[in-house]
Image 1 (tube, rainbow, N blue to C red):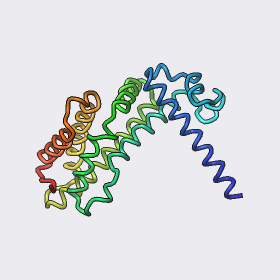
Image 2: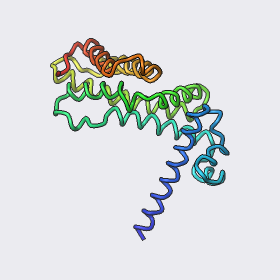
Image 3: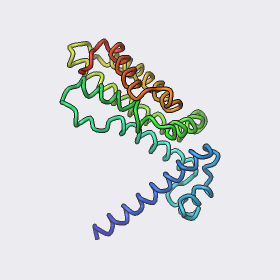
Image 4: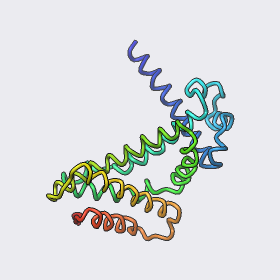
Amino acid sequence: MTSRRAYKREGEEARRAALIAATLDCIAEGGPQAATVRAIALRAGVTQGLIRHYFATKEDLIAAAHETLMSSLTAASAARLDELPADALARLAGFVANAVTPPVVDPRAMSLWAASMQLVPRDSAMRAVHETTYLAFRDRLEQMIAAALQAAGKPADPATTRRLAIAGNALLDGLWIEASLLPDHFAKDDMTSIATKAFESLLDLKFPE
């Protein structure tokens, strides 16, 4: 009985993920207005009724798609950090480098993000998802900044680390936008070097070579 329930749950999760993937494809090709229930159903190869089985409204589905996009970018920024030495400065440097290089830097992800941003001010579900995913990234960055400052013997009180995380997040966002929009304008290691040096200046720290 347990295995059957697990199998059903896995199947439902896969169908839900397929609907989200289809939604992201529609938005990437034509913006939020292209993500109609009919278009999503056609892309996913399902009936419109099945979409309503998993999502009460189209807005809920689009919000879930935005959450998936942003969570995947945060996860990619933290990828392979456990393979680095157990050093807070090295881990922060790795996180910063990941955040401004592929696969985080990606024109499609950038276009999806830009399309979603126009919905955030006027859609409560999108605003809630954006707030949650933004804070998830910023909080993770803040924790790593605090650990790096402590390792260097510098003040790491909550007010200081919060301020630095907000500034650092804005810095990474700006570089991510530039690199995603105009990838041919930057050499392979440009963004990593720029982001690393900017963070060293922001935190008054020196990352390991």
